[in-house]
Picture 1: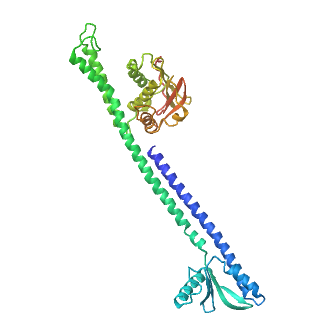
Picture 2: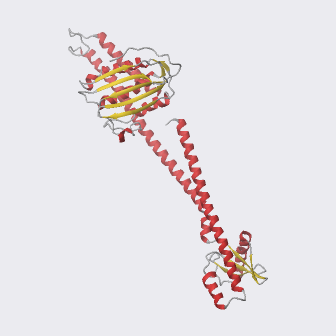
Picture 3: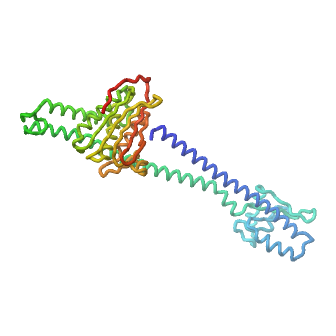
Length: 415
């Protein structure tokens, strides 16, 4: 993932968390507001019942029912105070005993009552037109607990963010370790072939044996051919080192003849076909395409990865890999396709092939296509994709944007 995409993803995730937090807090506050409104209506009803109990029109039985079924069963704190702001009756007030009328207890109750007065106000209890006492009440235990809900929710969100961040960091470090190990293995693999070849040529030069590669028909060592092959392998070593040196840094791009680059890449693999299978073939069909601003070393690496994967997917006795270059219909892109007649890639695997570390090979490290995607999409602003895969036909496509005009040049066709 590029730095720009990573930043956008983090910003999107941060904004999403903020929005979710706001929704949670707003919903909790709305629920609490509704509960408080219900509590106020209940308190008003409670006051009317108190006044009814105190009225001269209520019988003793009615008063007893009101006390037993309503007043005693109230679940919110209630204090009745006299005209001098002294508590005379209370219920559900912070666990304070209703029968404890000690001076210390009454002082605590008076402080709580004054707090209720500041918060909810004092409701007069009247007998006729005369005020006898005042009614004070507070929020129920449920409402008081819900008042902490927004903070609990924000704490949970913060904990979720922290756990997610730690988990993400651990996953990233694990992926980085895997990638570093994979890069080391890939480097060893890339360097292994030319080094082995050079060692073989040195053995031929030192042994002087006849009848082996590097010798002419008379049995003498063909020094010219041997040195040419060694030069090729040394050039290959330099190219591999140069490729790995450009990973992680912005590479230099130059106008490059794509068809010539494909010709060179295919020629490299054609020389090694006998080692992969006697029936293997590689074809190249070059279209009329313009020069494109690319890094030739890295683009060749991508195509080599695709060709190598294709050769491993086909039957060694009847396998065929075709490389095609063409200009897009709108003349804005150069298209490179690598096609093989192998067994194909299932849909489930196709969705994972570009993921770091994913591989179906016993000896693979799952970095070839990952590096290829980074080279094409981050360094060249192009696109690499698996456009089709079924038994007998698998097509990987590389799309490169054209810059600096569309001066299409004619190139010879390769069979």
